[in-house]
Amino acid sequence: MNGTIRLTAAQAMVRWLSVQMTEEGERFIEGVWAIFGHGNVAGLGQALHGIGDALPTWRGQNEQTMAHAAIAYAKGKARRRAHAVTASIGPGSTNMVTAAALAHVNRLPVLFIAGDVFATRRPDPVLQQVESFGDGTVSANDCFRPVVRYFDRITRPEHLLTALPRVLRVMTDPAECGPVCLAFCQDVQAEAHDWPEAFFEPRTWRIRRPEPDATELAEVAALIRGATAPVIVCGGGVIYSGAEAALAEFAARHNIPVIETQAGKSALAQGHPMNFGAAGVDGSAAANAAAAAADLVIGIGTRLQDFTTGSRTLYPQARLVSINVQPCDAAKHGAIALVSDAKVALERLTRALGDHRFAAADAGARAAWLAAVDIHCGAPVAEGLPTDAQVIGAVQKAAPDGIAMCAAGTMPGALKLLWQPSQHGYHMEYGYSCMGYEVAGAMGLKLARPDRHVLCFVGDGSYMMANSELATAVMRRIPFTVILTDNRGYGCINRLQINCGGAEFNNMYVDCNVAAQPQIDFVAHAGSMGAHAVKARDLEDLQAQIRDARNRDIPTVIVIDTTARPGPGDGLEAAGHWWDVAVPAAGDTDNLKHAYARYLEHAARQALTN
Image (tube, rainbow, N blue to C red; front, side, top):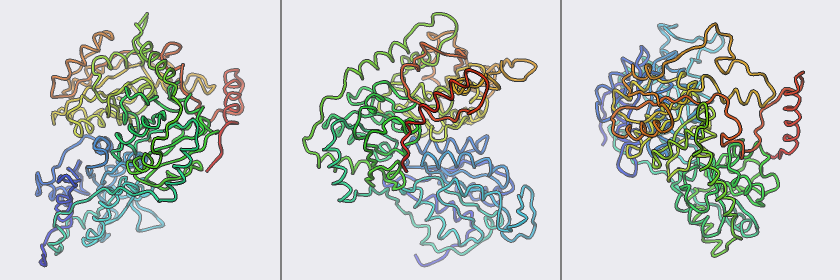
């Protein structure tokens, strides 16, 4: 095609996005979440209306939470497809910054199209414009720069000719994958330009599989062969690579235990004999024992966050190998790096190791831990209210094939430790651990996995932060099940506050400076947005309500009261590892003095590597 077509910049953007395809013949950007304002309604809004179902538009209730839905969708699709999110100049766009940071930490692709100021500057300062007294090129959207993988400000229509291909390159690059932001000046959105017709030809984006360097591969194979007690740390990169079968074969063939991060959990089903469960701070007794005894730790697709390494105290005695498509992640903690796609690396290592097999893994420790999980999760509620472990056990019985998802509070650690998923039966946002992700994330996950029962675990504190996308899910008939555990405050941080030597303060409602304790009717609240809402009388009723939820085409919210201060018997005290949270070095209470002494004891064992 040698001709041109006259379109506004916004029309050109949406037309181009509508023909960017995956190898499976689907749009890579499935559609656009949008809340309109004066910074995007006239330009981008009209363009989206004009293109119709060729690039669908969906209305959200809050800019941050509709972006959370987009992030969960991308995670549920293993980064093979994504959504775009657009908002107006000012608070609409800055509301998306938190979501951009969440996507950045979790290496997930989202296209943020942020309305911006006038490129001409003629009407400056416009409504909602943030002015810099020292830099005329700055707008509020510069906040996106540190939390996206690629940032561009579109101040001329023809900038899109280079900016849009860069956007898709980043979003489909397995090493650089993450959020991108186009700050789109509102006057430029409406400007017309003569575009090359060839620019709008459909293009297929293939997600490459980088091969390992031969020298690195040989070095890592030799290290594995020379080890006596290796252990594998399975991260989210295993799932994004589609390396689940390769990992299962590698672990079984060479008899190497696999321990899981939050992002890597359910790459192997819990029933796989080499799956020793959760690693690290919120890890199982079997997994952490295997890590502590290891002389070689093989990280696969993990960024080795502090929860995974026990703040660098879990396996300081071991050599560390890190297989990762991102060189920065592969080189962390002084690891021997193997920069490669996870699936390719595992296949090459399987070939290199041949029939080499290590001594039998401690199947007894694995069996003992799983038996302990059954006991903790299945324990009857003797008196008072159930623990998180007992709630998890009841949900697991009612929906063993469901996808458990969560993000913040006590429940992520409890789920990582106690939930026994089928393959791909787990979805946790724990890179940023963002309160308020859960409800919107459940909606995005259900869009990605319509074949699975999505089980959204959310505490009362996180629900209060962001719940309005329930209304969106009702409007669009997107069914999922919310298990809302009400412990009347921020129970997770209250526990951490006590463990760090502090007094109970400002976390549980009862410890806050308020005139009256709130009596929040969560059932009425969720019901007012159109969800089916009910309060479970007990664990048996909870299971019945979860089974009934499968038959609805709208979200179901099940509220259950849980104990505010779980302790011995909650299933969490028998495992886990130290987590480095700074403890005050001076204070008068015995609790603080003891906490600081414990802190110094653990900190002295930290491995201080790069």
